[in-house]
Length: 410
Image 1 (tube, rainbow, N blue to C red):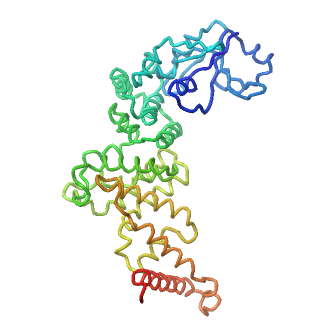
Image 2: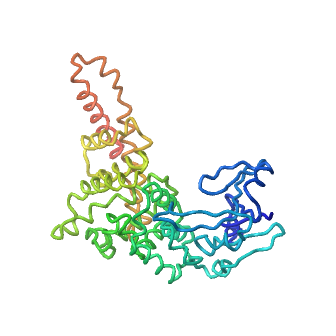
């Protein structure tokens, strides 16, 4: 039996990037032989084993045959006679189909090294079209290797997959998994650019696709449309190394602008409420984790309020803090402010402009949290009035504190 290092580890080594995980392919062995050598089986659909000491994954060389729709519609064949070239031929992109033998020799039957040097993402062969997840993976790799182009014939193949309806068989969990990984790359906008180019975005996230071509508000640089603005916002979230929940909220914050009646464009009155509704639909359809869902809805509802913080009075600021549950969940409120900062800076010429709203609202939150609600409750004779009195005390504290900040001599 022969063991080869394959896939991403070889790709990243050749690019001079740190290697996170190593995958191995075993050629010329059977499951029984692996067990006899102390390997532990973990694969459900095909033979994958854990090394007895390193616990790294070793997969038997395998072939696959399309048996149905979707990424689960495959039958796998793993036998000692399956060659390394056969195994590499079932992979998605040429840059992921390079192997290294134990003596260091590179095996590159699909010219992945050439594509690495040229900066091209290219499918290995026609089998790419059998797995709809590969369209998402292609887009995700475009976000990771943002200087790489996508080969024209690979784009055409992805288009044909979309047109055939193959992507309609993707399960929600897998779509979310790939989108989440792509959002965490250095330039997530590239993922959505590739999905849009091949028509997949309209199938997977039609609410987002509709934003392209929709004008922004006149005061927010009408030379870019809302879709482009959202792409700039998510790239801002990547530059700022934001958490996944913040990046996802940045992606969905303006969905309501896509359903603004023509007569109301480009002012988009009421788009926040429509954004909340559409973000809720997207989150339900993709089965988004609760923390990402809740922040996305919060940002969709309140990003306009945060942007207008300097124009709000103390009453409105405290109401905003309470509506966002900021007093009980200050960490999530910080994520809201982070998403709003990405939204503000995600405009042409706004990248380096000061954005004072977060500092103002942080100060207001500190002032509101300084109110002793327990003491107010103890001194209130009417329990029904406790909430009203606590709210009033917070408004007074915020009003007085912000007034002192505005005029330190007062």
